[in-house]
Image (cartoon, rainbow, N blue to C red; front, side, top):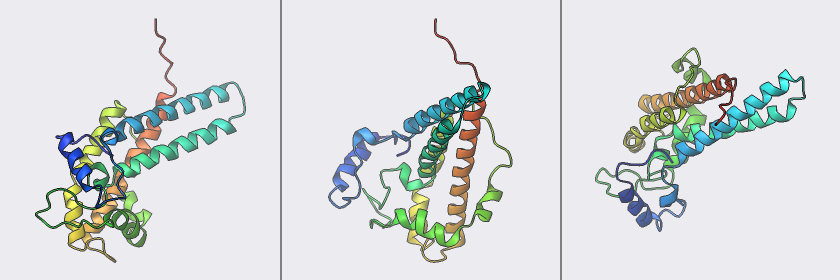
Length: 212
């Protein structure tokens, strides 16, 4: 899940009320808002793995084991970053609208797979996404704060995603608006992951601070 909503407990109550009709949702109060903390922890592990790699290279030791660890951690981080680019993931409505629904958005448990899997596989190509990314990786100064901003930007698109689904934007070939949203969110995720990995590599060269 993404950043904590403005009124967390209202969201928790809505989730509890929706459990009976959304058996696929296992969201509880203690799980809401944990995504940025989990992603930051994995990023820190990645940085340590890269530091270990640098040390082994300097000592002319075998690096295969730590290389495998770094690849695993980068993939683990990528899972969180990818989830963080999917707007409903950052809300209490990850797979169907819950709570007050005056606009009649879907309550079926299909929007999750429809938007991020079926529509993307059928309509989005790497060549559509690459031009939307920045040309060069950037070093992130504050990992946690920047990642929360990334999630907040995604979260701002929750209702738009449901509006587009209602208009058929993700059905078949969809609509230009649906395609743009998918392209842009994939590019945002790819850029975020690239910069996180690049930053981990750069900062892995920093000396470890010694506590007194």
